[in-house]
Image 1 (cartoon, helix red, strand yellow):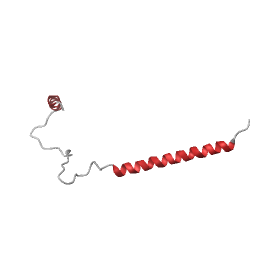
Image 2 (tube, rainbow, N blue to C red):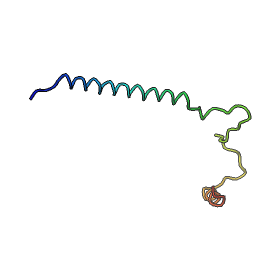
Image 3 (cartoon, helix red, strand yellow):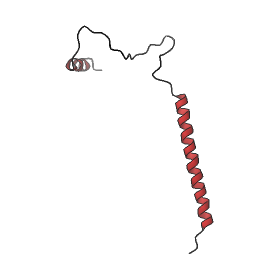
Image 4 (cartoon, helix red, strand yellow):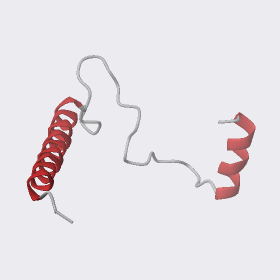
Length: 77
């Protein structure tokens, strides 16, 4: 049985080229995604208002978990 080494080397070359180009394309897409994606933690500009505030507001009384669950089911949120 004759082993066609030249043909296998050519196939190996194309497989390695395909893997290298796939790896490069993956990293290119990763860079483009990071460039396009907005920073969701920055303060909005203009008249926009950020909906989430990290500090807790001062309340007259603390709500229990049962009260919050009751409000959740009452409002259906």
